[in-house]
Every structure is written in C-alpha cells, then in structure tokens.
Image (tube, rainbow, N blue to C red; front, side, top):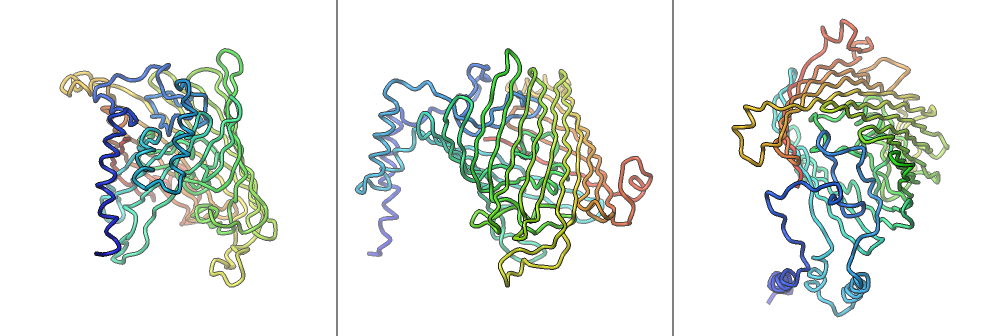
Length: 465
C-alpha cells in the first residue's frame, strides 16, 4: 500500500470528531436566514472578528478599529480554553483531534467582487476581480488573531494576452492582537497602513462605486499592507466625542517609486527590509457626534540605503446628513530626490530611473440613498428594506509634481446601485477621464477634459459572506 494512505483516512477520522463537536455545542449555530438586524447592544464587540462597515447602511463613524475588548464568557472559560490548547499541543495529538478542537473558536467569512467592463477604447470583458477570505480566532479573552487572504483575478495561473503567468494570491492582513488596557491593544503582523480612511475600509461590499479612487491606488497604494507592529485603541472624550488612534513601525516603502504607478511597486517586503530604518505611520480620528468623523494620518521612512526619505500626510472626512453621505480625502507625498536603487548589488531592481520628488491626489464623493416604493412592493419580502444609491465622485492624481505626464489623471464618475440586502450590492457606473499625456494638466474645468477624454462603463456585483 502507498505511503500516502493516511491522507485518504483523514476525512474518515475527521468526520465523526466534527459531528461530535457539533452535538456538544462547540460549533456556532447557523443563524436563521430571516434573522432581524442586530441592535446596537447586540452588534459584535471589538475583537469579535473581522467586521465590514457597509457604507450608507451601517455607522462608519462607529466602526470598530479592531481593538480587542473583554468578552462576557462563562466563568471558567479561560481555564477550559487553556486546557484545550494544552491538549492540542501534545505530541501525541492527531491532526484530526487538533482540527476538531478549533471548531468552537474560529470563524470563516469573506467577500467577493465580479465586474463587467465596457471601455470606449479597448475590448469589453468580464473580470473575476477578487475573492477574499477572512479568518478570525479568539485565542483567549485578551488575545485574538485575524487574517485576510485575497485571490485576485482567480489567483494562479493568470492568462494575460494569451500567455499564462503567475497570478496574485496575497496575505493582505494577518495580525495577532493583545489587549493591554481598554484603550491600548498591541498588534503585530501584516498590517493595513493607516494612511487615510480608504485603505482601512476598502472592502468592495462597503463601497458604492466599483472602482477605487485613482489617488488611493497609487499615491496611497491601496491595498497598502506592511509587516510591522504597534498599538491601536480609542478614548471616549465625554458623552459624545470619541478619539481613535493607530500607530505602527513597519518595514516601509523601498525605492521602486515610479511616475504613473506611484508607490504601488514600492510596497515593502514581508521577508526583508532594504535598509535599517523602520518607517513610522499612524492615524488619529475624532468623532464629535454620530455621523461625523475627521482623520489625520501620516507616514515617514527611508526608501533606500542612503537614507533618502518619503514623508506623507493625509486628511479624510466623513459626514452623514440623513440620506446623504459626503466623504473625501486629500494626500500629499514629499520625496527626497533619488533613483530606483538601494537594493543588493546585482539586483535587477536597481535602475537609473528617477524617483519623483512629490505626489498629490484627492477625491470628493457624495452618496444619496433613496427608494422607489412601487418597485420594492414587487420584490420578495426579505428585500423590502433595500434601497438604491446614486453616487458622484470627482478625483485627481499627480504622481510627479515636477512634470505634466500621463501619470496626471482627472476623473468624474457617476454611479447607481441597488442593494436589496446589506451584504449584497449590484453596482453600475460610468466614468470620464483624461490624462496629462498630451502635456496639458487635466482638470474637469478645462475644455480638454471633455473634448479629449474618454469614458468607460463598469458594472459589478459585490457580496459579503
């Protein structure tokens, strides 16, 4: 018999143990399909798992930052948990027994997005944009871990222009949190860099437009994730005011800083740093009342062995006025002059390409939620609380402030969505954009923007599970 026969026996061993765990109540019960929405008191507390704030449906100002808090566990829970971990770590414990022992503490979820693109210039296509898995585990009352794994364009292999190549499977977020106090949690791992609000809240079902802001895929290279460690938490400042903060030390950006791409190719390695300087980054946000949040954030770090630095500042705001949401961000990057160098000698990453000395970008967006009552009366009962959202966004990016290039882009986007349920949204949008490739700085108020620009229709479906 092949030496591989134990792998075929593993499902047989695991199945009865899984069934036993479910019978004894160790696996969480499946929620009813028509379960009502949770009240404020019933909503998951901080540290109870990855949470997605649905823009226009939930309170983004009241979004948890991921800080762990004390859970109301039955007396003796911690001791029982410790006993379980001790058993799992025993040398004689089988793989099936270890798998069965985590059913009562680990949660799996995620989101996905699928697009259809119809460009004025180019070929229309369906695009399996992303499929993201969330894994959360409560290790103890004060320790938790959360992970996000993304398969972009269906992972590998990726077929582009007739050729098969490597696709993208990324560990975009993977942290372990240790709550020290009610206002301070220590976090380590693969961290979302807290420069601006969009990078922290970029999940597709939470957004009302299919495309991310152009400045927040380049100047702020969303999804921007770095290996590092630091602290996060919140303070209640009186009856209504609240302050949230995050501050981390990370490996930081390297020297592959390019016009057009911005910092996207310069995101740091999770294996090694290209210099001994550790970048510092952080964000502070304040909410004076429910429905309004303003944040300031920044980043500073060396990008090569010579100590040349990147400094970045960002401001963001969110304001809810009834059915209308107003949100926007502005970012400015200051970069010491240099070249795409600073990697080990002989590395093909070293070039004489010039590093831009400054970048700038912004967006402003308005979302208006509304209902068409005759339409909703025709829908299934579970969709009667759904709504439409009309969106308008104007944005610009400039990835080299010294010159007018194709990296300068202005874009105007109109969108209309249908959200029958909070976790599911059908989006349609049309955007018109122009670049500075002709030597003219693009702005919506310039005649060239409308005369020489081009449009793209984009539709997508996004869902949370």
